[in-house]
Length: 239
Image 1 (cartoon, rainbow, N blue to C red):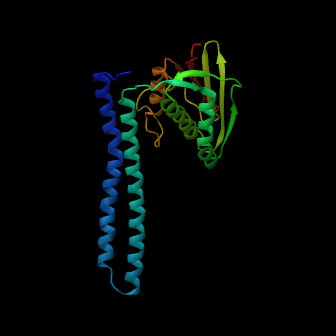
Image 2 (cartoon, rainbow, N blue to C red):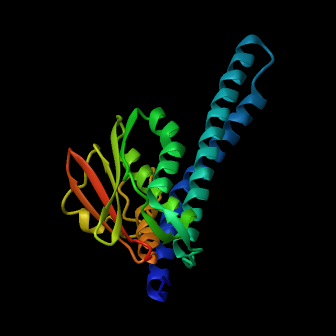
């Protein structure tokens, strides 16, 4: 799935906007750190001066931590952008979807636990084999897990199901989070539409791009205050 010139132009404009905020935070904090360290340099050698130096040094360290966080955010923004605009060249193999989901649940469980999220799983008891790029599909699922976690800031339940529907393998990922307002629902797969400060704005669009590259579909159902459910359908491998 290629990115058109017009879409790429729009994306780069949005990327520049996304980068400006962390860059601004970094610049301000660097200036404040310089002021704190100048204050340390001016402080006298008496007890009061030493105490003031300690306070200034502690504040400078806190600002350095803010800068580290913002540089990590910049890296995430750029990595997400490169992943999204990159050509989705699939390395196809026979993949049992239920087994892949089970692996992702094991991988994500510690993070879910740390955010007070209970994972409940109902996986199909027979193989659901699709021709798929395992790495890319795992990335799409991880993006949906992260989206669910961000919707459940105070904890909740994450229900993950796999089942068969005619000639498709179906993956359903549901959360008990804040839900999505009806007017926002049509736009959640648009690049940089994320309303969450910690979101990259490309998690759901990238998941959609990966699913569609597998000739699959992704749909969403949500109710504000009750939660959101994503349903992925992938064509089963023909015998």
